[in-house]
Amino acid sequence: MNVRFSDLHKIVPAKLYRLVTVAFAVTLALNVWANPSWAADPFRTREARNIGNKTEAAFKAIFQQGDYQAADRYLQEALSTEPNEPLAHAMKASLAYTNKNWATLDTYSKKTLETAQNLISRDPLRGNLYTAVGLFLEGAVILQREGTVKGAPQALSRLQLVYQHLDKAEAISPNDPELNLLKGYMDLMLAVNLPFSNPEQAIQKLEKNAAPQYLADRGIALAYRDLKQYSQALDFANRALKMTGDNPELYYLKAQILREKANKEKNSQLMQEAINNFDTALNRKSQLPRDLARQIERERRKAEENLSNIGK
Image 1: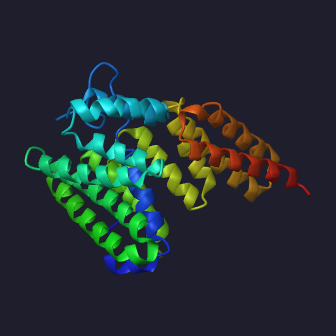
Image 2: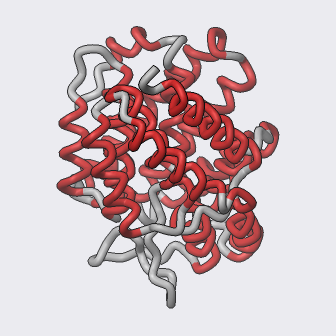
Image 3: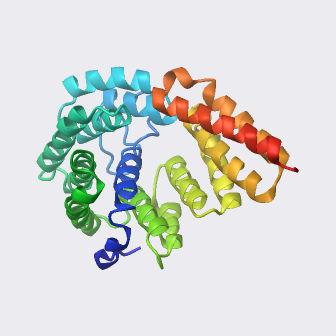
């Protein structure tokens, strides 16, 4: 999808907050499938980059295992031993956002941007890519500090800069899997929220050029969920679970999809399956952020209410 900034006013300010915060958070989840023995590039089989052992371990803890507590411990080491890897700073900022620690979010959004800009001379592809991430983070900081209405114009200006840096990265390597994964997620967020847009283009980008496949499948499942195309969403959530079946967040996503599909079809069997998936996610709630675990519990209770109302 080619972003038309003349259309973006249609989602400001009501939807820009959701767009920026969701898209930047998803963007940070693009580095997951790591080699267990060394710090391999999770995206490329050729011209691989070494992201650092501790940074890699933090990614695996969150995105393969859904273990935020372990990830935080790994990140403390990564920030000390791998200070020039922008991904480590971006992850620290993402955890700060999850925990509503706005001062830490501000600090590490700046660190992400600084380390990414320093990387441009050595690796212009990834340097520009993570400069875009840093700018997304800055947009989230602005919205938290200024509020949705007052902060929206500044956040929108950051969004424009994000796409400028993504364009620079795309000029270097248009088929790069890391670039296509990140940009595919962002395009999907825009496509779902903007009227008259075509999310299928972004979905095709994820399916064709993005890697690792698990994250591409997860992004497509999220998009189909938001588009209320629940059968397709369920297919892609199941694909993601085949590769990362220990991650409670994926069971939570599947439960959400099943619940919506069950409500639409008034299907009690699907609703019970949704409740079972909520339970599977909650079996590991100790490793999730507290607010997220509470949200899953609330949605499970709602699913039970839905089950009791089906057929009445």
